[in-house]
Image (cartoon, rainbow, N blue to C red; front, top):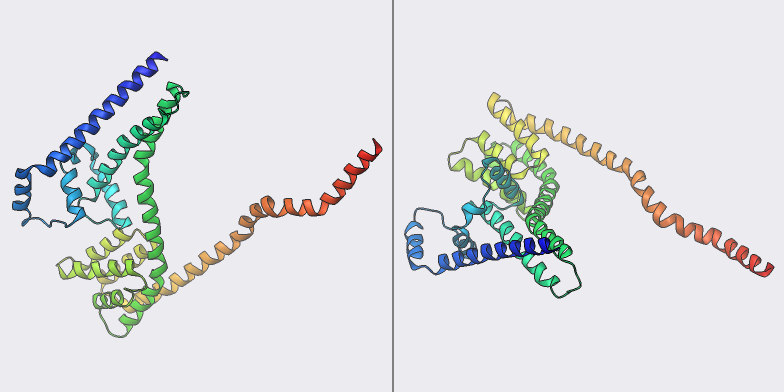
Amino acid sequence: MEFTTIGFAIFVGIAVCFLAYGIATVVANATDPVRRRVAATTASTEAAPEGFAFDVQRLIKPVAKYVLPSKSEEQSAARRQLVQAGFRSPHAVAQFYAAKAALAVTLPLIAYLAVRFTPTLTAGYVLFVVFFAGFVGVRLPDIVVGHIRTRRIKRLRNGFPDSLDLLIVCVESGLGLIPAIERVAREIEISHEDLAHEYALVTAEIRAGVERPVALRNLAARTGLEDINGLVALLVQTIRFGTSVADALRVYSEEFRDKRMQKAEEQAAKIGTKMLFPMILCFFPSFFIVAIGPAIIKIVDAFQSMQ
């Protein structure tokens, strides 16, 4: 027990030292006039964000190298998840890992201060609560970003059929592929804002000099949607071989409708199995109470009268 108490005290001391160092670094970075002048001098050569985003970027810059993962694969995976969730800032990865580090330190301290009001708890239980709070602090940003990403992909999936139909109409009416994508982005800007923004980014990249296949692949990478990946692959092949874009889109639209119908039929076939467990848990107990309950009450009364 004494060893557990000493180890826990050492852990809390280390956490407090790291927290104090981080706070001191942030305060020094925010109040140092030299850093402010250097940032103002270099602001003209970099695309500097404004408002709260710039303040967060400036505050976490000194500790970014301590919280970012060393492997480039982990940073690429985190950047891809953040982009698909809608966070496109170049400093989003650093802010994400800084939030994880801050929560991993502050939540255990808060948990420790909270459990100290209950002196009956043992040191082992307090240590478990602190480590569990640290685990929650590390995993909480991942859960939040994953939830935001799932909701965004769902919105993109809901708006893709409408945008595909509009894209076919625009191409068949004589517009080129890129003007058609731009027109579709304007038409669905109100109903499907996320997808319209992605289409607008495609046209913006092409106007900036990016090749059309590269811009379309960037669209597939940003969305993470399987249906858009198939459309992008089809359009890239059409551009490469010089075939008709309208015919390719029409064929893909028919296949996409068939695929949606198959998914709907699959979901309908699963309804019976999914309804089985709610019926067993909710319907059958009520049915047995109503059907057999009076008979059981009469049987109990009969045995009591026999006594």
